[in-house]
Image (tube, rainbow, N blue to C red; front, side):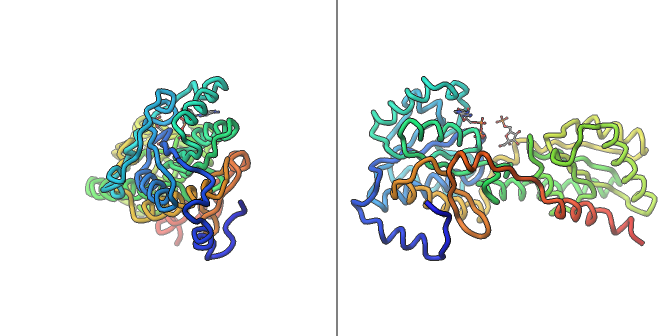
Length: 353
Ligand code: ADP
Ligand code: F6P
């Protein structure tokens, strides 16, 4: 299937697909890896799109782990009611390390066939995509959706849950700003992102932080990083800045240690807050609900059209799909211009005459 090229692509696909035209009879839906807000909107849209196309729907609990334990059920219409506004995943999620073994993948494909599932929707991160790819290789038509708050999937500019996580982090930082300003303190706020700094960058800009530390721009030299932070704080403090906000990505870590070192070096009271799992939960934003719905509907339509081994993404204002191998081989990096702008915006009111 080619990337979406025309505005009326979806409508034409839908029109083409009569009740009996679908290439799959029964789809299974599972969520895998870290949960993210909007996964339920994706589950709901996948199931409802399938039903609209005359396709049966089975839910698979607890990702690949539940699949191997045959935690498979006929999804009822009721199952998809009242879930669009909720965080987490009603199908639960799990990690399943043994799924990397060929014999386990073969067993999983046999289980899917036994339950009459000839199309599978996998909602998760790039690890989950690899599992989907392996099932596609076993003859199960599979389409994956990017569900992760980290935005660390190269083939797409959007992942399900990112927007909610950023807004949650931004709200928390706004609150920390109030108390940090009142006490004239320096605050380090650690946000999620094991290997990716997108959450840090976005909520850092949105909350007006002076410094944003991300794995993509960290060379591993901790003393140098600390020195730069301390210099920046001293410089802006000398020019009248009364409190300081530093956003640190989880991939860098050491926020408590950094706070101690900064306080010792600058004499400014410094506190660290690790936001943690609060960023993974909560009511999904409108963007997460809407994008998840469209992407999930497209995933089902791809299965109905006979596609397999695909990932759905969002690029250049359009919903697109890629071969999983191609998607996994893509790389992306934080845009240098955006990174430089984020640094300039946080400090220039104090550093530029
Ligand atoms: P995410 O999907 O969020 O990236 P993980 O990396 O933990 O999360 O992957 C989720 C699950 O996907 C793993 O627990 C495993 O079951 C499956 N998986 C990951 N890598 C592979 C692989 N190379 N082959 C088959 N399955 C995999
Ligand atoms: O969902 C992605 C993520 O939030 C990463 O930023 C984080 O490192 C990881 O999940 C932690 O998840 P868990 O503790 O569930 O392995």
